[in-house]
Length: 89
Image 1 (cartoon, rainbow, N blue to C red):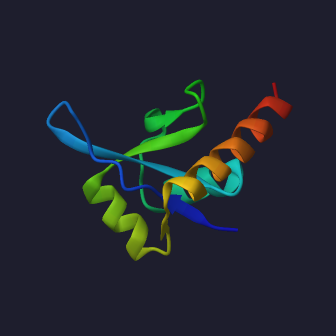
Image 2: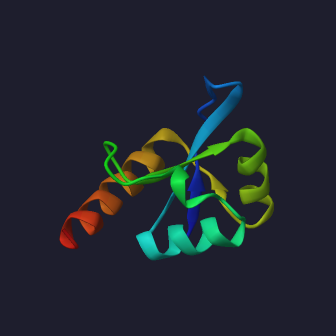
Image 3: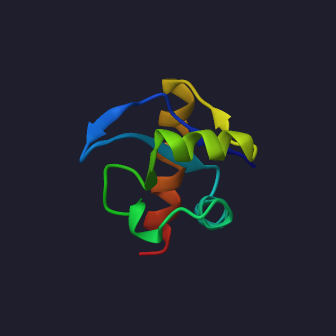
């Protein structure tokens, strides 16, 4: 199992934002809690479930073992998370 962060740097409300995903929703939520990411930053109903994290949070995630992932890895992971989320609805 792994946590992934992308290379996005979307500017919004004075911050630069990236996305954080994982191999499973439970792992994603556990890791977000570990690095103190606010639960409100989880996007359940987006095109794929993920956390929006600031660039500063991304560095904390990487320091705690997250993997900087390319677009292909992020898309693959996103598809798995979406399937997992849909199983519980």
